Amino acid sequence: LLVAATLALAGFLGVSGAALQRAFSDSAEAALRERLLGHVYALLAAADEDPDGRMLLPEALPDPRFSNTDSGLYALVQDAGGGFSWRSPSVTGQGGGFLAAQPPGEQRFSRLHAGARDLSVINFGIAWEDYLGEERRYTFAVAMDRTPLLKEIEGFRTTLWGWLGGLALVLLLAQGAVLRWGLSPLRRVSDDLKRIEGGEAELFD
Image (tube, one colour):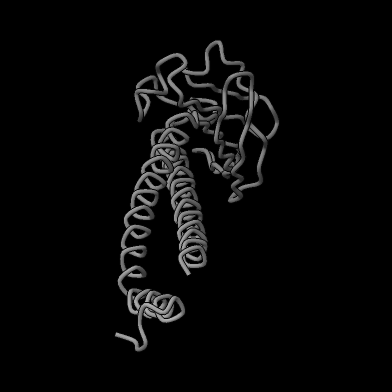
């Protein structure tokens, strides 16, 4: 009984832990995507245009990490014809390479492994109408280092399995105590049978 109950408990806690871990990871990934999309909107809101109608990004960017080299937050902008391109100062020395042109209104999330970097990337296509009413197509690409996300997930995993392991130990001890108490009448009957078989008694106590 104890072995069967232990196996059932281990299976239940294992499945529950895996489900909770997956749910947290999915939630963290979704939150990261929302942050990437928010950065695209912030850059788009800050954008202006030069006298030739081309997009112009300000020197003071919405998030200061865009202005710091190797900050973990990077941005690229390029028009459909390749005649205009812009990169945030944070990309300096990083090589870029995470922009993939998208049609207006389309967005694409992806992961990029570049050397020691592990990035989450959004590419977002827009149609920009300049002051002359001409439509220009651009793709905004924002990439974010996944290291903080992975540390957050790893921290949750460690905490989760630590708590589940402690809970399993407590439940096993309680389970053993309950089984010992519940089966005590059978042990008494077994002892009485042994005494009767040995001629030490004639009746059950």
